[in-house]
Amino acid sequence: MQRPMNPLLQSCAVIDASERLGWLAGRLFADLGASVLRIEPCGAAARDDPDWRALHVNKRHVALDLTTAEGVRRFDALAAAADIVLCTPRPGDAAASFFDYARLAAINPRLVVVSVTPFGLRGPKAGWLASDLEIMAASGAMSLAGEPGGEPLRVSAPQAHAWAGAQAAVGALIALRHRAQSGRGQLVDVSAQAAVITALAHAPTFFDIAGITPTRAGAYMTGRSVAGAKYRVFWPCRDGHLNFIVYGGGAGQRTNEQLVDWMRGRRFELGPLENIDWKHWDPTRSTQAEVDAIEAPIGRFFATLTKREFLEEAHRREMLGYPVSTVADIAADPQLAARGFWQDLPGTEGGIERHCGAFVVVDGVRPPLAAGAAERA
Image 1 (cartoon, helix red, strand yellow):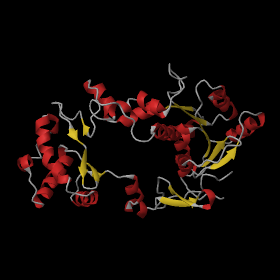
Image 2: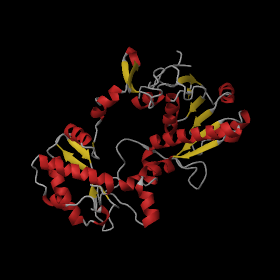
Image 3: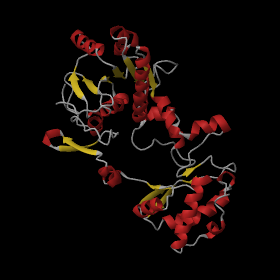
Image 4: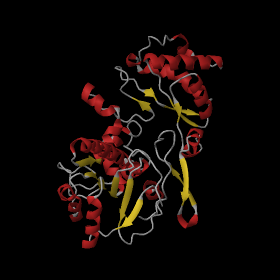
């Protein structure tokens, strides 16, 4: 099957020889127009797992037995003509030396080798294996998820691979830019643990700047008040939850004033909200008692709204805040439909399966997916 034209990375050849931590990186490159060749073990069973199929769509597939001399010869021939090799060498596995950068660079000095491992290729934990649960724990993400005083939690479904894969793609793009200037390839060494740390947003910064270690706060956000007050982030509504926080500054002033006006128009009891001067209100100095008093009427008001009501009125009023979407909400999202995000492809046993389309729109067109996850090279 001829691949649709995508001008972004149409001349880039990628070999995806990775396991789970690298799958997303290969999918991202395929979506950007690169020719991604997925290496699968010979005799591998059909991959019916939705996760596998979602992240291997838009790639071509070839079966290679890398434990044989012929398999190695064919792989090396592919690497000699490739721009990027994605790999996830297992620490302690004898086969890991197959993806050694020095070996591959000798074959192709312009090759960018992207290695994605739990803790990186160097350091005291370089030889450690880890599952998603262990990576999320080692990164500190689980220390922030859950209720105050409760046990640490993993955030819903496995996520370490997504953060690691995204960072791997970014690193590879930077290495390609460097190669364009220097003519040399290089090794991109991605630690999944470090990749997840970038997802924690405020937590490392609070420790570095203020010496504060953020803790689990459930539906609340901490670290916004010198008095130690916490602010609610997720609010129950009639058909789910809303994401909203009482802000300060210019953006907060606009949102808070519009919220109060909205509540007043609905003849809703404002309580302490009635007399607040939002232009000069400073959330960093509020006590917990003050925050609780402000949030109480807001919570009662939100409980009367549906997610759609909140979204439409908040948009009209240019307020900060958004409904918390479920998977069903995303599948029915008119914005995604209008932008042609979903694409139907042939699935298993002659059926049709819906896939997330390419994540970019190029010159007004979303690049179509080339094929389903079973296409052979």
